[in-house]
Amino acid sequence: MCIPTAANPPDASKSSSSSAPQFHTAPTKLSTLSDDEACKQADNTSEDAASEDGTTAAASIQHDSKITPLEGVKYLYSLALLLFSIVLVISLIFSEATKLSRDVSPYLALFLMFFTLLWLAVMEGQQAALVGLAPVVDHLVYRDSHPVAYKNTQLVYLGNNMDRYLTGRQLMVVLSVFVINLCGSPLPGTADSYFGLPDAMQQLFLGSGLAMILMTAMLGQLTTQVNASHCMIDFINNYLALFTLYFALGIEFSGVMHCAYLIQYGVALVSGEEIKSNEEPRTWVQSIFFWFRVLLSLTVLSFSLAVTLVALFQGKTTMWPNVPTWASLLSFVFLLILVGMLEAMQISFYACAKMKKDERATSFFGKKTGELISKKNNLPAFMIGRQLMVVSCFFILARVTTLDVEVGRGENIFGVSDAFQSFLNLGLHAAFLMTIMGAVVWKLAASAFPKVFFNAPFTYGLLWIGLCLEWTGICSGAWLLARILKRVMKLQYDEVYVGTPEKPVLSKDYLDEVAASRDALEEATRRLEEGRVVSLEEEKAKKGSRNDEVDDVPNDA
Image (cartoon, rainbow, N blue to C red; front, top):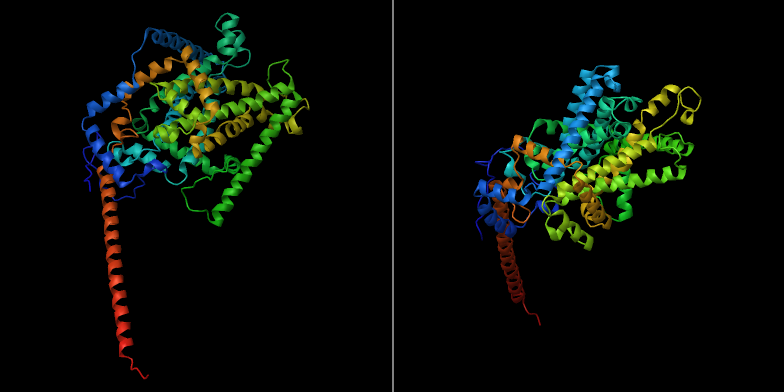
């Protein structure tokens, strides 16, 4: 019997003895180890965790790479585009050429835009961290050194909170992008007569929205995704991330997104896979409340879809002129599926990041995907290329689905009032539709079946496309910004705290729990064996007693 040795995290001097309830294992197959595996990994991780400097150096060698001259050129021209875009947007705001700056205040618009960008960056990085940390063997190793990160993981891994978080967070992302565009997008006509720039440049940066896309993608999404891909624990060790988690759970509780669960059940039924729940079956009261929210959300979704389809068939959207109706409809369906695949790939890659190679790759394409995504910085590189594809798809979808109905001429969709038609012209129904059908449904499916998407053929193809787009360097500035942010925030790689899937770091509490369970098992086995011996002896005694009684019976014959 081996004696497990505690392997404490480098930044934790001792293990906490708190008596609070501990939900210290994530709901995944890798969360539990056999006693023998725990002992073997304890021996390995004790040596690996002996030196913080050695662990940090090994992690840096694995993830960090030197900047080549070509990469340096990409960084420079990408940052130049970003700075030019920021100057353009800020100038638009103080010229009151955006909706919020014109209607309210340019100072409020500027503050709200950058605050929303900051919050969006937290949302994007937090998702990567919470999904990626799920397969970690022992979350107790960072409980003392990263208490807020520990609160984040214990809350999101409790019951089915992960699905709830993903659902609520997606609507937060869409609303954040809506607010950012409200603050910084140019009003109609601005792109044609501003800054005295050449017409081609005005249309490229302002008319097409490229300035807003670059600023939102690089500042609000990609930089934190790059860091959170490998520095998950440090990234969520703050109260803004914890507040974001509670806020997302609150949005999900409201029920506006509940129709996604109905679609998730349909996916499970078609695939023949059972959706595993980490909670007890609902009571009849909980079931009534749940299905009421599903019905309410489904009503809103159905209305949004009907409005969009009617507008497409009647040619009342902002789709480019001379595009046939059937082409607009096919583009709408194709882009929704493409965005959904990209969203599912993101969840699948993060969920499988901490899995063993032979467990996550179960097919030819799965092995190819695993080999490609494991090379150097290919995971964060794909996230950059993926973000470009997602932003481009959503831009086209916005053109396809945004209504272009002039109010007051009797051409309102379904004959609704002018006030309601003005509300529909804002495009919120399209944003809700894209959130459900283009993101949430796919993310929930990928959260339930991450290995199915990881091993799919289209995953390998889209992975290559994403990597090629990142290679062009248009958003390569995110890499440099991520390096700067990593140094400023002093982010450490996750291997420093939790080890690797093959050699995880185990806390003293975890090892004591394993030892206690082994001792309990041995004690139960010993008592069972003793009980069997006693039972055999009692049985023999009973048989002997019956034989004696037979011998004492008089023989009348």
